[in-house]
Length: 268
Image (cartoon, rainbow, N blue to C red; front, side, top):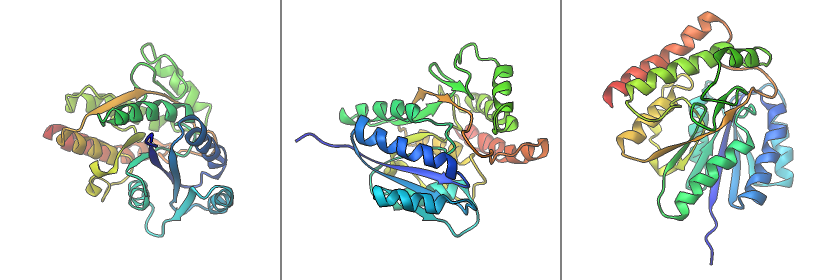
């Protein structure tokens, strides 16, 4: 009998109702009919003031593989992801942003690569990268000849944060030097792996997306093989970026990334 793979998809959310209305049915369609695996979609809501909870409960009536967790503690992206991992029922987990920037097309690329290795009993961690061939940032398709000015133009015309984009580019250039690694997107936040390889501490006492730097450092220290798959990071479909839009917020948000880069990079 042929083995059927399984996957838990974790979507940390904060006021992403309009995006989830589009994204979740697309994910379910992908996993059921294209990749054909057992799955669950776990929305971990971090105190939304929109109708996210009502939306997910309504979707659950038609598909009980879709569920929601309402967090009650202080808002935290890292702890939202960790909570989703803790309640997941499958060994393989994937998480991604719920704003539409990480598309179902990109998910399919990562998952096909991941399960091809798993089927061969050669398990790897797969990360979505915006900075290798096949990848692009905020709608700019040609990563090798990518213009920062084209990216800024695309972001300014959307509800995303230009400062957030610049932060990501700068930090990743910095990290690639410190880690002395071929990995290009060390703040990706788009990953699929076996949850047995995850240490809870990488999510604890973290501010925002810098948790991912600690996660990658932990995986590298365990000699777990990591492979990047290029994907196009689109501008968000609806709503506004949580990264912050001003130079002060940009600097405050960036400090934990710099600290994580120095701490983990110098240990490498």
